[in-house]
Length: 254
Image 1 (cartoon, rainbow, N blue to C red):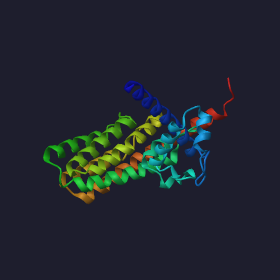
Image 2: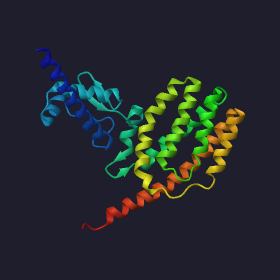
Image 3: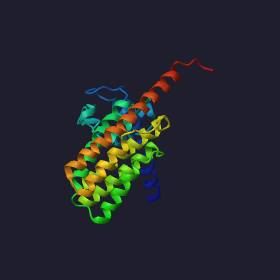
Image 4: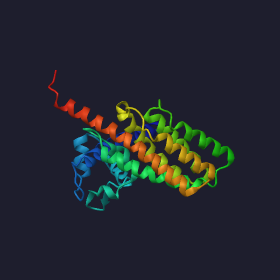
């Protein structure tokens, strides 16, 4: 009997995950508006051919994400997205039309703040071996043959060095949250990257000099300058990506 209960629990969890994912997508795509009440548990269970326990667990998952508010005796009501968890960023990044440019740009806004703050926080605390690793990574950031993913992976390695040096747990947690979304976005637009920013070498040299001097404000400024150059290149790639999708949407079927 124990095995039956375990198997039943596992099946219910699979159902609830699938149901939660479907309802989450419906909310994010606007099928249900903020303040609107979701269908009752009984109606959802009947429509999806599952038991009410699976529906109840799915709604709890949505509540944990901040997407719904479960009101006793009045069901689950959709909340505004700005009240939801940051865990939804990855879901918001993609839509049926492809990559959501605005979301990616906002993610990178926050990422730039984290990078600049991490640099200022850690530059005075880096051990000599960590400083040497950081300067080596900075030199590699200007490599002309690197892909967008290569560039970001090196940046992430720098953030990890900074987080380790400052023993900053929350910085690491934020990085873990945003990293998959950024990598996913860069993977989509990576084929549209062309050439390199001519000022990238100058920006990396400025960051290296700030690291060598252990100057927090200069390091933060250099990181912001480097990030802006990377964003300019990304903007061109996004323009090409969107133009390609627009052409595909208007092309006659074969």
